[in-house]
Image (tube, rainbow, N blue to C red; front, side, top):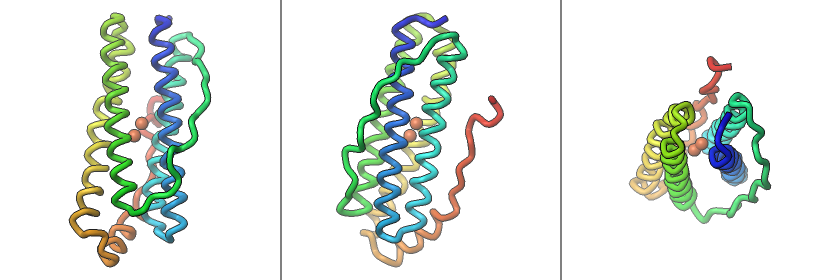
Length: 172
Ligand SMILES: [Fe+2]
Ligand SMILES: [Fe+2]
């Protein structure tokens, strides 16, 4: 059993995670259209991670014996970016926004005295530190090299190696 306020909050967050997935898929498709296979791969892995987050939250609600609330997933606010720097500025901004949402859920879980939910959301608190840090690192590099084609080519090569690892594989 979960309090109604928490069912709502976790359902909204699952939706926000699926929206994040959608946004990264739009970015992936943009990178693909530029022929940047590595950036596209990095963003596709990001998409897969966000899908896993949404699914994980949905499963948590079900595990607590509740029914998730379904609402429409917004379309990505943008599908074109003027530069990679602009795109990664949005990645960082978006992750900062998500961190705020996760923190609010942690506060709500605590205020509602739901220790299981408070414990559950801590994984996401840590995850957001990593998310912001990796977005910030890529953005800083892009700014530092001023999107020099050779540097971007090398980054693109490096990003081809990123593979999706299901963070909840052991929990299933
Ligand atoms: Fe996420
Ligand atoms: Fe994320």
